[in-house]
Image (cartoon, rainbow, N blue to C red; front, side, top):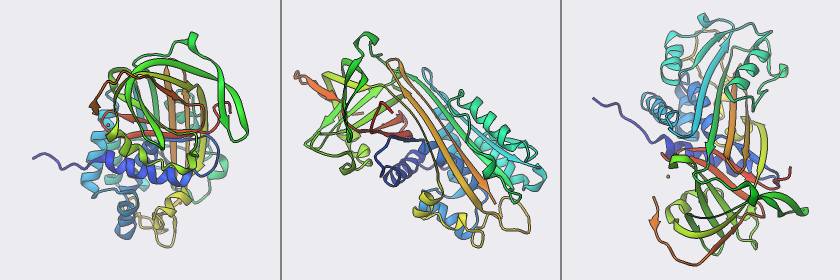
Length: 370
């Protein structure tokens, strides 16, 4: 009998936009991997019981344990089997001794999440974890935790790292990249801006323009949500990506002006997740992670940190993200002849999404020169 599955992409994407609505409130470049965070906490969810387990389901839209974890395994398998692009997912657990944990917990981590179980002295754990993350993200993220994250109450650290390297289906010509204006709150800046005239999936209305640029083999797409100039980015709901994907159609003769950009962004997850309803997991008096280990002291999440990197240029995109948890997408075809100008010369949202529907990365560009 085939194992029941749930739509991981639906749950992941709902989480992605809920997180982005909280995060994208400051006027600065921001970038994160909802899939990395979603995957990391999925592994913690294995050990959650009773009300804590229910909060994972309500706040993060995780399904029943057996169905959810098997579906996550299927999702990760699909994403790691791209033919033309690279998307690597790595998971690991770091603790003093494996003997402290229930065998079932470690078995599920290894079998369903391909997680590495590492025994390490806590005097070396910071350097070991950071070295592992650096290796798994092609040295794009070199530090995810610091000595200040380590206490004598630490039981284990669970880490997820994702790395993406994608080539555009049609590359931008380097000779067409020129210094062009980009308008920020501080005024006009000259930034390296790429140019291409091509046909892509596209939609616009009185409020914004939506463009989807494919990577090789159409395995992954970069979707860009650009408000019309009379609208501020803050007046646009980042969750509109979902409805605009359904409205887009193929348009020819699109002149695309897109700035090159590179950014690294990191933040602690605790407050954001608590605001989404995952409160008990962070409270030592209420957390129930009795499915992890049989110890007398309560197990809870003391802190969770996420860091992400992205670089977009003429050839494609390189992106990486890591999450550490410390425990104490077709469209209607239409080809009208008129030329369309898609000029990303002011702040915009962007997402990197697989052809199976998962939002892998999500960000916003306020100033590509930063």
